[in-house]
Length: 237
Ligand SMILES: NC(=O)c1ccc[n+]([C@@H]2O[C@H](COP(=O)([O-])OP(=O)(O)OC[C@H]3O[C@@H](n4cnc5c(N)ncnc54)[C@H](OP(=O)(O)O)[C@@H]3O)[C@@H](O)[C@H]2O)c1
Image (cartoon, rainbow, N blue to C red; front, side):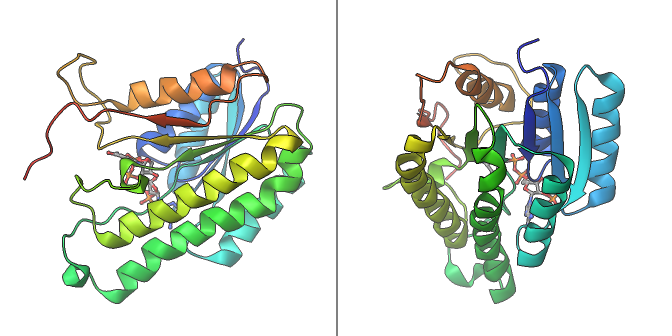
């Protein structure tokens, strides 16, 4: 099996792309540690994954906007495994809005705090990643984290959080390379969870996940740093 016993942690994995990523790795034999703000929802996903096999999953609570919850997740992982092969930084709050004033201050604080949580989680899981023989950090960023990107209707706070994530990924990619840790970042435009995979269709989560599986599956000489996508469809004005 391609990823037999690979130890994989995924944030924001109780639904959406995070859940699909957890399922995809477990379907290839991985042992998945999935976290979410709602641990009950995460547990249901983990149970379904484990029942289906061949990999298995465990659920953990982790609100990335709460530093103590982030440290708690890292500590719980350290109690479960002596190494981590793949950290997937997936969880991120999305907010719409053209104008800064379109959302209240606490929403903006929460979006930015989630970005800080991703940085803290990466920091606290580095010892487990360093203990792996094939460590990867996968970052689900967004086209909103690309310099010059203006096509999304996302709120400026979302752009700011994704630029922060992109900046973190950029420097870590360089600084962790000597330690053999690959930092793989994806910058997709808006994509759909399900749909046809045709040239004139929206990008699908399945295609984004295939990029992750491909990059993680490469031998260690092959360090795919970034995936960028052409936006096929014009976003609504
Ligand atoms: N879908 C797209 O069009 C698209 C495009 C580009 C990039 N992305 C990125 O790809 C990743 C997954 O996307 P998606 O389509 O699944 O997005 P989504 O539907 O917006 O889901 C976001 C995920 O992040 C979690 N989350 C939000 N705030 C969190 C927090 N404070 N702590 C922990 N988890 C938190 C959510 O969990 P809850 O269930 O607790 O809300 C959910 O699982 C995200 O990083 C997203 O920004 C998505």
